[in-house]
Length: 348
Ligand code: AHR
Image 1 (cartoon, rainbow, N blue to C red):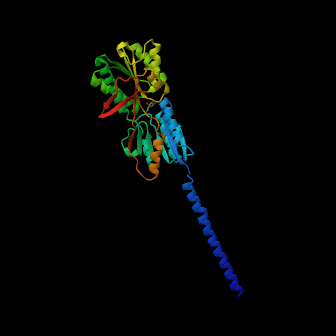
Image 2 (spheres, rainbow, N blue to C red):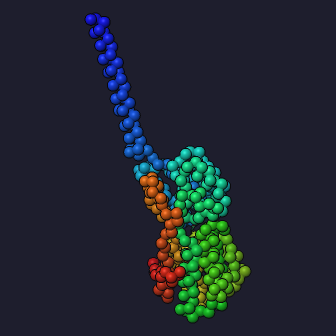
Image 3 (spheres, rainbow, N blue to C red):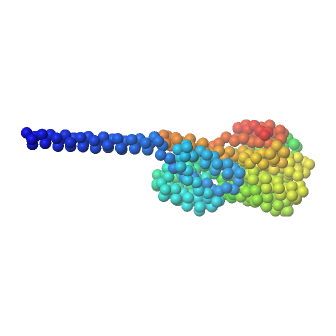
């Protein structure tokens, strides 16, 4: 009887042990798992920004930083490529080693990304390309792209110039244009340069020079100083961003010439892109810049929307273009038509 009681006590104790170990399995493991998925372990985003060359770029970086915050459930790893593709490739490789959840890449130039994007793909990390494009042999090397249609921006600026000269009775062959280009090989430069070059050919404008200004104010000024010494009859300066335009205006005014839309009376017309830099928008109000084709830098919320889609297992659009405006100092041209779409001209 004593032996039987002892056996019952041992069995009861064993049961309690098993039950308590089961309950500790459920109470310790399940809640931990739930906590991991609901308390929001941060989503880790590695962002390779190409540099800090312009006001547009600063606004772009700020948009990403203010979206991917700890409060919003993210850990953002930001690397500045300082205009060098090699730095950006190193950053992406580091993100892969860190096993981030998503890579966001703003590429400095279009070509040369195949190898590193293949590495990210092999690691199973989605890559979202923002702003400029990558030119790769296989589009499956990146998840999707979001940014501006730079060729369309160039076409809009050129078509506005065409309409303006028609309205003012300026002969096409009297237009002497110089182009201060952006970073050579970047999508923004390629598209905007092509937009102007196509129109110059089509309408018979004199496109006297194309020189790289690297999207910076200092280089825009330096290039304009050189061009003013080379060509005495420049009447239109097409700058591929606002920083270059501000630099070019400094050079033109320092040379004793006047910027403005009144080409017929000797003013030098400045055309630009972005519409982010306050100084440039003020110059539109003062008719020192005649036209700005907008380029919108606020990609943070757009990238976050893509990440949310991906997290839900949905597929985002492969290519998403942003709608953009055109701003002018003059009401001479009320609207323009490009590729069968009408774009109203906004006076800021
Ligand atoms: O790629 C977008 C361009 O890059 C912007 O127009 C320019 O300002 C920037 O540096």
